[in-house]
Every structure is written in structure tokens, then in C-alpha cells.
Length: 99
Image 1 (cartoon, one colour):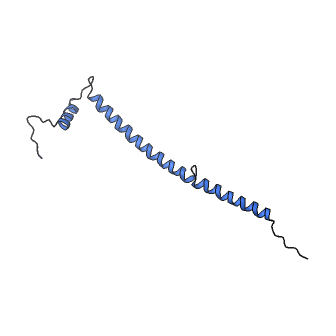
Image 2 (cartoon, one colour; image 1 turned 135 degrees about the horizontal axis):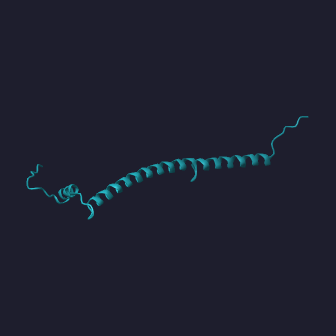
Image 3 (cartoon, one colour; image 1 turned 60 degrees about the vertical axis):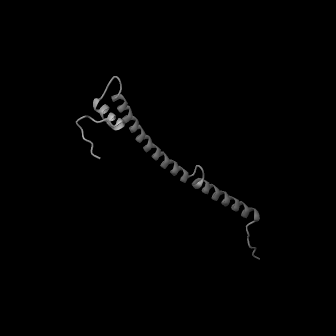
């Protein structure tokens, strides 16, 4: 007499729960708040913000340079003339405006 060995209900239940937990944790590791995809998004955002920071630091350095060149201690007459022309619309007497 041969007896067929069916797995017991406890073993089937154990492996079903283990498989479900494995699927859940795998999904969480890939798609979750701290998963691989979120990590890639954060790295891309960090790179974009680093580029923005470098661009803004360059703009700040340029503004500091212009401010220093128009300060009381150091006056760049060419820059002053350029600013007067662009902001106030001033012209010299010997210039002709073409529109």
C-alpha cells in the first residue's frame, strides 16, 4: 500500500505566508518610500539642485563684482556709464540714436 504524501495545511500556509511576505518586501524595496526608484529620483533631484546652486553662486559672484565696482571705495567709470545709459536712458551729446 502506497500512501500519497500531501503537504499538510500548516506547511502550505507557512509557504504561502512566506511567499507573500517576500513579495511585499521586494515590492517595498523597489517601489517604497525608501526604495530603489525613490533613491534614483532623489539622486537626480540632488544633481539638478547642485547645478542650480552653481548657477546661482555664479550670479551672486557677478552681482558682488558689479556692486563692488560701483561702491564708494572703488568706482568703475565705464560700468557707471553703462548703467546710466541702460537704466536712465542717458546719451552723450555727440551720439545719434537709431531705432
